[in-house]
Amino acid sequence: MGVSDKFIRAVYEDSKGNYYIGCFLEGGLIKINPNTKEYKIYKNIENDDSSISNNSIRYINEDLYGNILVGTSHGINILNLSTDKFNHYTEKDGLINNTIYGILVDKNNGIWMSTNAGISKLSTEDATFKNFTITDGLQSNEFNGRACFKSKDGNMYFGGINGFNVFNSQDIELSTFEPKVIFDNFEINGTNKKDISNIKFKSNENNIKINFFTNDYKNTKTTQYYYKLEGLENEWNMTNSNSLVFANLGSGDYTLKIKTITQHGVMSDESSVHFTINPPIWRSNYAICIYLILIIISILRYMHKVNTLDRLVNERTNKLRKEMEKNEQLFKKVLSLEQNKNNYFVNLSHELRTPLNVLSSINQLIKEFTKKDNFITPEKLSYYMGIMDRNCSRLLSLINNLIDHTKIENNIYIINKKDEDIVYLVEETVLDMKDYIEEKGLELIFDTDVEEKVIRCDKVDIERCIINLVGNAVKFTHEGGLIEVLLQDLDDKVKIIVKDNGIGISEENQKIIFDRFNQVVDESSEQKGGSGLGLTITKQLITLHNGEIYVESEVGVGSEFIIILPVYSS
Ligand code: ADP
Image 1 (cartoon, helix red, strand yellow):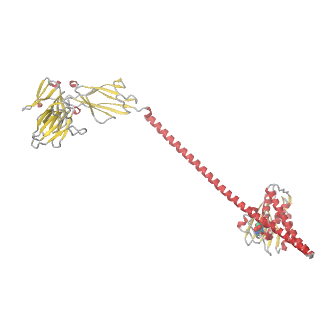
Image 2 (tube, protein in one colour):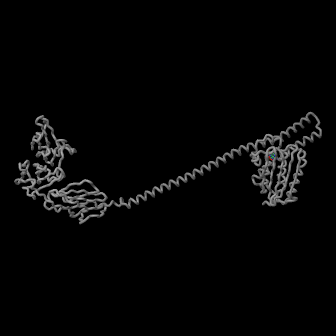
Image 3 (cartoon, protein in one colour):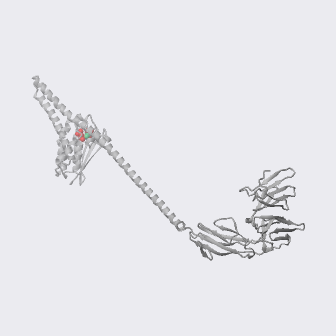
């Protein structure tokens, strides 16, 4: 069979004819079917609550329902043959002692067990125990193995170390005494306290000893207490001690509940005591509030910082973008100025070359005449001299314009303001040009709405401006055209208009004609004899007089140059 434990303590044949062998030295329970010779060994299996509770078998019996009752060195086991599983009961469940010596069953299926500390009766319907000790009249609390017997009349015999007891289960009177658990005193970190109910302890006052007793004085040695410390555990624990120690309790609310049971199975009401252990200061509600506030402040500060940084970055980015745009515009302007400067020098070179070419050709011509001893007639000579004269004065005026313009730009141009009759000044200048204008086949009209108007100005400069404007009108108006010079009195100002019905100026060119560097390369300017400086100087001179000049023109219709001069300029 392979059973090593040969110390057999119990042998039993059940009502169905099965044999049970109880091994004492850890061999467990063996069940044998004598007909089939089949057998089964029941042994304790760790962590399996349905296996037998102990392998040291002391006594075997059967209850009225055919369940096998197995007394061991650690409680009683009831083997249910239909499920082949064990229920077991130990001191934890209320059994008076775990060492089972004998088991008898009364006619109500009450299971009576003699033990090493008295007799226990188990009612299987409600799994409760009634316990009996020497105080109930037992020969002693200690019984002997297998010394039990039930007579036909139902009397039970249990033998022990001091004789035997015989009783009929029906005759046993149970005490109905209701016990009570009374708290004796408490020790907090070793210091005595009479009462701790509803006290709030500091976090380090967390080693608590609770002493108590029961008023069931009859049976103080085997008194069983059931307790649980709510806040720490939910299960009931059992103890035979009159004190409990809880060490290093964490913070929280605790309620100790404790109850006891008499040996005759009467359970007491719960006695309870409630106390609190406060968390340490750094975990108190105040501390948590402060932490929360600090965290919120930190988050707010962080968010504020991020927002400020964000704003600064945005501002800086916008500033940089604007600066970049500005720089780009400046760069474009410099580029275009450079371009215009080039244009201007190209134009200027043309301007210089044309009269020089004329002078050089005439010089060549006269040389040829003298070489071949060809006489040149005085008429021809005077004609050539006239051409040379005009081209010299053109060159001179060009260079004068250039010099004056540079002087004005460098603030060294001297302007000599005096009280002048502007009506007289303009009329005289225009009339001086009358012959020249009519020679070109153009009509000239001068008109004024005032006889005389004295303003402070430089006579030479104003004359020069009028000559420039009228000269341009002549240049850019076809034969048969009309040139008008009009003068209007605006009280503190004077308006001078030089109007023609010539070729006109495109809108694009109107924007640039007052700026010498903006002058477009104009191939025809050579024939027309311009330097591109006339309007630039005119505008500069008018500005020096605190006046203004602008143009209104339409291509193919004509142009109107308007000068407005203040009467008193500083
Ligand atoms: P320039 O000495 O070459 O004439 P200005 O500064 O006097 O230079 O004139 C600049 C340009 O403006 C001329 O080249 C011409 O294209 C234009 N302009 C000036 N006045 C007139 C006008 N009355 N009609 C048409 N175009 C004009």
